[in-house]
Length: 278
Ligand SMILES: [Zn+2]
Image 1: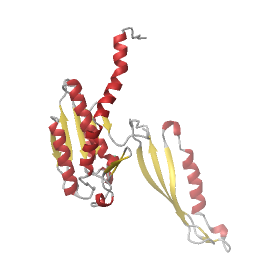
Image 2 (image 1 turned 45 degrees about the vertical axis):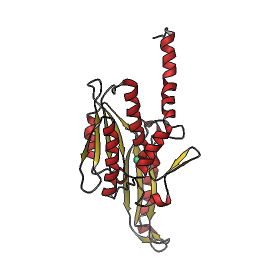
Image 3 (image 1 turned 60 degrees about the vertical axis):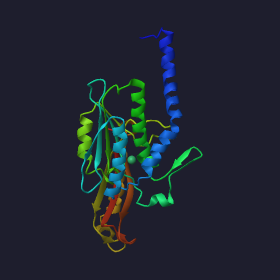
């Protein structure tokens, strides 16, 4: 067991978080301004030119802090941006991961302008995730001002197609993640307390199709095999696989089946969403 005996050490350990919070509070307007400038460059996933404008702006901001910016060129989507920062030590980098595409179509700014009021910030993509990009910029700047140089290498990866499945960026993300000692995804924080997300669940979507035998429910009920009844049994079995302690959930979110009320159903389907913690 370690005991802190030096009052100087315990005091500075106490004051450090407050001092750092104070540093960011003093720079609140600058941080808000960075977010606003990112939000005012609209960047819907399906508009390469627009997304590329946003990535060019982000690249300049990171380059101004001494990062080596390079674009991974993509034809169907915006280019992905990688920025490498050297550190004092030769450790593996920490990867800061994010995306600059948004779900808001071009022109949304007209009806949803970026504005600040009552301690809130509005605009397309403010939450998901242009604030996260602004925080990357200001966090790197803060570390540089506290330490002179970053204590360890940092790589920033911003992709252009996260909102539409990350197909063109997935390989790049996986490659850089494997070369890094840790990955911090700066997507919006969890809940109003602003807790940092340290993990994301895996997700899978499945459809289940049951085929039965149709029959008239009055004339020859016994010849039928109800797909709906079997689907109901399957749903019961599926729900028993849920294991909250392991972070495994299965949700049957959609069901369909049958043709008429007086016909034993020959077909039934269900769609399920599966989430895994590991
Ligand atoms: Zn996002």
